[in-house]
Image 1: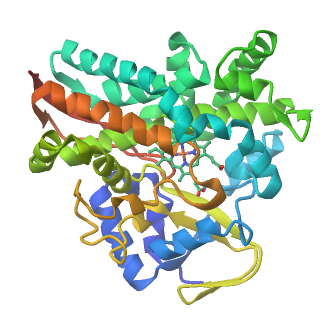
Image 2: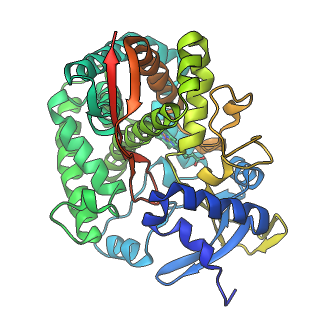
Length: 414
Ligand code: HEM
């Protein structure tokens, strides 16, 4: 343990994720040589990185033995300590366990079930139509990630949440402030990620306080109303709980889905035969979307903590040890996915993807995410004669949520 393996760096360094080929080559090596890797890095509490599918799956599903706790995303210890000393203790669904988690999740669960998503399908169709039309209006040339994928996925989730269209840029800026703090493009004028996170939380707080006040005074049919008036065990949620609930719903749903869409389209465009297969057989879209989400794995990790000692892939880990679940690596595990480094819309078991996690924390918005991609892609492919990459895609530098942030494409429309 005193001589840490430098390969552990790929889980910490945001820049490592921007070079996908290198990242996946190192992860593949780890899966075969050290699937449970002890990682020690100055400034970070040590952790064990799990890169194999079976370990990630088993840990995700055993919520009694492996807890989320308050610190479920990797960051420098100093950052968390700094936030705690100024009274900021992030506490979203992701940070909860047991009954507390189930009670909070139960508040909004019904809004994310397949039936509820189906009720929203007409609205999703209409938003998708608008964005295909926008692409056409742009003359068939655009940065698909920035101009289509990001605003499309943002609009879908904000229409459910209840945030008006004119406030969408604020939501986007704030989400990128929280998740993209390591990418220089999102740092703006601020060179200090701590200051940026603090400022972002302050601005979210002001915005959500006004939104909660408004929805308590004038309830309506949106998710913001449900959260603002939510009760847990018969008591209204306090300011802190309401703030973090708003924050997870507002932030978890668009960058993730947007990266799946932009990275999925990139993969598709690198395989023109697969574009043709999808155009020939529209029913293939369900499988193709799962393959895109497997391939892109926009959420790079979550952490879990051991309540008791455990042995995973032959490595003994003491009680209290923390585990990093590497979803992108597990999604390329050769033991589960044949030719795992190949992108194939007809992969027979694409639906075994682990991009949405598992167990009690399984992604609340997975049905929305899948439906958003399944809605826009056939419309796009049906509208174009040709669709091609128009330059090199660029990946975000982020070790938590990331993917293709610039995707230049050009199309001729029918
Ligand atoms: C492709 C898109 C998406 C990916 C890859 C993704 C991935 C994930 C992952 C890995 C988790 C943690 C699961 C675990 O710990 O086992 C999660 C949780 C969550 N996701 Fe998603 N997500 C996506 C889209 C969405 C959308 C559209 C929403 C809608 C708001 C959403 C809301 C949430 C929430 C609220 C949680 C916390 C659930 C809990 O802890 O109980 N996600 N997601």
